[in-house]
Amino acid sequence: MTTTTTTAAGITILGSTGSIGLSTLDVLARHPDRYRVVALTANTRVEKLAAQCEQFRPRYAVMSDADAATRLQALLKDRAPGVEVLSGQAALVRVAGLPEVSHVMAAIVGAAGLLPSLAAANTGKHVLLANKEALVMSGALFMQAVQRNHATLLPIDSEHNAIFQCLPDNYRAGVAPPGVRRIVLTASGGPFRALPLNQLEGVTPEQACAHPNWDMGRKISVDSATMMNKGLEVIEAGWLFGLGADRIRVVLHPQSLVHSLVEYDDGSMLAQLGNPDMRIPISHALGWPDRITSGADGLDLLEHGLLQFGAPDETRFPCLSLATAALETGGTAPAILNAANEIAVAAFLDRRIPFTAIPRIIEDTLGQCSVHPADTLQVILDDDAVARTTAAELIQQTRVVVAQ
Ligand code: NAD
Ligand code: MG
View (spheres, rainbow, N blue to C red):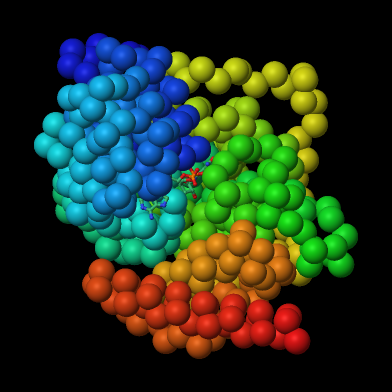
C-alpha cells in the first residue's frame, strides 16, 4: 500500500557529513517532494557541510565548534546565503526538537549524540536511530522519553532494522513482542575474523578500518573489528525489543546478506536480506510505513550462492562478552563500557595502544568504576566522565609499560 504525501516532511540530520549522513542525503535527494531538509550538522568538516548546504538549502546548519561555525558562515555568505549558522551542543539539541521537523536522523557517532538524540525523542519525533551509543548509555531513560512523548523509534542499524521489519505490526518499542522466542543478530566478524591470533597485536588502524563488506566511519569500523559493535548492538537490541541477553543470540555470517532474524514460538524464523548498503535501512525508516526507493541494487542470490553461519569465537572477540556482561549488570555499566571503548578506540586510531589493548582497557575500566542505577541523565553523564578519565589513565600506564 502507498499513501500520498501532501506536504514534505521536515528533517534534521544530526551528523550529516558522516557515512550515515551521506547515505541519508543520497536517499533524500531521490525524494525531493517527500522531504525537506531543515537542519544539517557536523563536527569539523566545514567545507563538506558548506557543499551540503548549497545542495539542500536547509534553514539551519550547526557546527559543534564556534570557530568552525564562523568559517562556515563565511563560506555560505555567497554560496547559500539563507542558511542560519549555529554552533555548540545547545544548537544540536535545538535543531533536533524544532516544531517544523517531524523526522530526525540521529547519526552522530558516540556519546556526543546522546543529548540531541534524546531531544528528538523528548519532542515526539520520528527518531531514526543510528547513534547506538545513545541507547547503550541511557537505554531506560531513552525508551521512557520515546513512550512518554509518543515518539516513533525507527532503528537504522541494519540488524535492528532487519528485526523491526520481521516483527508483527503490533510491535511496541521496548516491549517484548508477543510470540517471539528470541532474536538472532548476524555479525560479519570484521576484517580479522580469520587472522591468526598471534597477528592481532600488530594490526594497524588502516587494516582495522578496511571492513570486508561495509563502508563506515572509523570508530564503528574498529568496533566491528573487535566485535564491540556487536556487543553494543546486543545492548541496543535489548532496549529496542524489550529482551534480556538470554533471548539475543549472535551468529557469525561473513557474507553480510542476512541482516538478522526473528525466531517465533512456533519455530518459524523470519529474516531480512539485502545487499550491504545502508541506504536500504535508511530508506525503510524514512519511508515507514511506506516503501520508497533507496538507490540500492536488489540482491542477486545466484551471484552469491552461499550463505554461511558460525559461532563467534570468544577468545578472539572478548569485547562481545564484556558487552553482554554489562547488559546483564545493568545500571550505568553499559555507559561505562561505552565510554571506555570510545577512549580506547580513539587511542588505537592515534596509534597510542595496540589493537589487543582495547578489550583490556575496557575490562580494567569496568573493574575500577562503580556502577550506579541509571535513573537520571546526570548519573549517566557522571559515570561516563569517570570512565573516560579512568580509561585514559590506564592507557597512559600501558604506554609507559610499552615504552620501557
Ligand atoms: P562517521 O564518523 O562517518 O560520522 C559521524 C558524524 O558525527 C559526522 O557527521 C561528524 O561530524 C559527527 N560528529 C562526530 N563527533 C561529533 C561531536 N563531538 N559532536 C557533534 N557531531 C559529531 O560515523 P558513521 O559511520 O556515520 O556512524 C554514525 C553512527 O551510526 C554511529 O553511532 C554508528 O555506530 C552508527 N551506525 C553506522 C553505520 C554505518 O554503516 N556507518 C551502520 C550502523 C550504525
Ligand atoms: Mg549494525
